Structure formats: C-alpha cells, structure tokens
Amino acid sequence: MGNDDIQVSAVIPAYNAEHFISETIQSILDQTWPVCEIIVVDDGSSDGTADVAAKFPKTRVIRRPNGGQGAARNTGIHAAAGNWIGLLDHDDVWSPEKTELQIRHIQADVGVIHGNQFEDIDFGKLWHRQVHIGPSGTLIRKKTLLDVGGFEESRAVMGVEDLNLWLKIALTDWRFVRSEANLFSWRATGQNQSGDDFKMSSAELATIDMIGTRVKCDPMELARIKQASRVEYARNLIAEGRWDKAAELLQQCSPDLASRWLSIVSSLKFNRLARRDLVAWLQYIDQGRGKHVCSGNCELPEKQRRLCMDSCRQPYARN
Image (cartoon, rainbow, N blue to C red; front, side, top):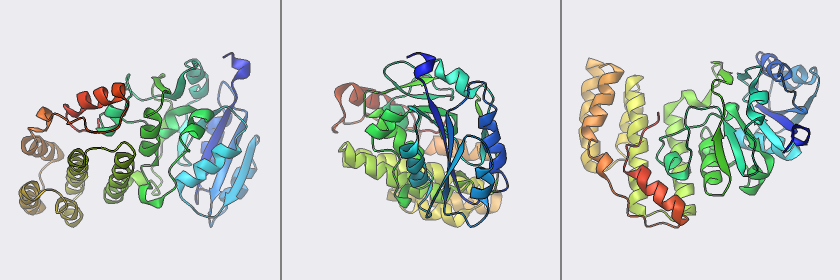
C-alpha cells in the first residue's frame, strides 16, 4: 500500500473536556504526516467541549447522548472516512511524528500498529495479561475494527474496552506489529478511568467472562484467570490503602487464598508495608502458579490454543 492509499482519521471520544481538549487536537494537527480528518465525539458533555473542538480545522464534532467511551469510539469509527483509525483519548496527546512513524509498518495482514514495548502480541499473552497496549498509541485498520464489531459498548466493561477489543482482534488472522515507542503522552486530569482499581477490576472480570464464553474456556481455567485478576487488583488496592475494597475482592477468591490474603490485609492495615513487599507476598503465596498446565479445553484455533497454553505456564502479570 502506497502512502497515497493511506487515509488516517483521528477519533477522539470526549466527555467534559473543554479545559484540555485543545492540546489534544493540536497534537494531531501538528503531525509531520497529516491526518485526513479529526472526529471528536462529544459523549453527552455538560460543558463547552463541542464548541471548543469545533473551532479547530479538519475537526468534525459529533454530539451523542452519554454512552461511554466504547460507544463514543464506535460512533467515530463508523463516521470516519479514513481506512486507518488513530485513537486518541481526550486527555492524551500525540508526539509530532506518531502517524508518520506508524504508517511505515503497514502491511497487507497488519490490523493493529502499536507503540508499546512488546514485540509479540497474541491471544494467550493478552489473556494472561503478560502484554498490554495503550489505545492512544495505536493505529488500527478500519476494516479490522469492523470485522470484530468494534468496541464493546456495555458499561460492564467500561475502562477495559481496549483489552476486550485486542482480545477479539487476536482471535482473527489480523496481526499486531510494534512501531517505535513513546508516541503519546498521558495526562492526569482527574477523569482517568484507569485510576480506580476497584472499578477496573469489575470491568476486567466482565471482559474475562465475555471472552471466556466466546472461546468456551474450561470453567476451571476461567476461574483461575479471574482469581489472578482479583488478586492483582487487590494488591493494588492494598498499596493504595483501600483495605475494604481489597477485602471485598479477596472474599470472592477461593477460600484458602482468600483466608490467607484477608489476614494479610488486616495486618497491612496497621503496618503499611511498601509496595515491593506486597509484590513479594503475592509471589510467595502464588509461587506455584508458574507450574500450572492448562487443560487446553476450549475452542481456540489450534495455533492460538498452543500459544495460550504456553502463556498459561508463565505468571499472570501486568508488565
């Protein structure tokens, strides 16, 4: 595909972002390889987000009732004229060469170009949270998005819609490829969904159920993945001093693990151990998890099933 055939539409879901969306849009206009359009989807804002965004060139504003980030992104994707979609959250900014660097990685079978540090992305690594991809650092083929039905719009997965999407794409023949890193910057605005570990945990558990049902994952394997997710988020909540929320998650784990961790939570509430000590505790308690061998009882395609079983033998971890 030559550069003349590449049209990139930038899609920004926005909610009450009037104080910082100008910098977000300007970072797109400053690209050394220009996008064909900027679509801002105002997701039911009660401030002047739409008015601020509409003042910029190449920018089209679509207003819709509040439906969450997944629904807003889908609205922008369906309206986009480009054959490639550059996602950008309203509180992030692109580096000036982001688009120029990423289009160099376009090949016929590439569906997602990302700027994270992970060389190989497959279903197993995503399923076991050994890799992750930030949406604002991606360039995604529009056809790939349409092939998998876009983002999940259920509020149950709000905050991890991106993980849900990557897992769906990983079940297809579209490839993930890595571009140069550090192509966007994240800004703390007080609205970041990823800042609430308890809400994120609920959303991730919902995604695990959705994808597990899709691939008919063995119920025991599904339970193990969910427990690993709960423990990870509980560890984070303990580090934040949110003892009650951590205990709420741990109470949903298997009885033996829950009893051990709940006693630890009680102790940590008074001793406030450092985060690295929490990680050490987690590794000690779950030291046998790397020895687990998956049953392989699911309906993944054979290649993906083998890769997933290989990943299953490694620690469940968000690197």
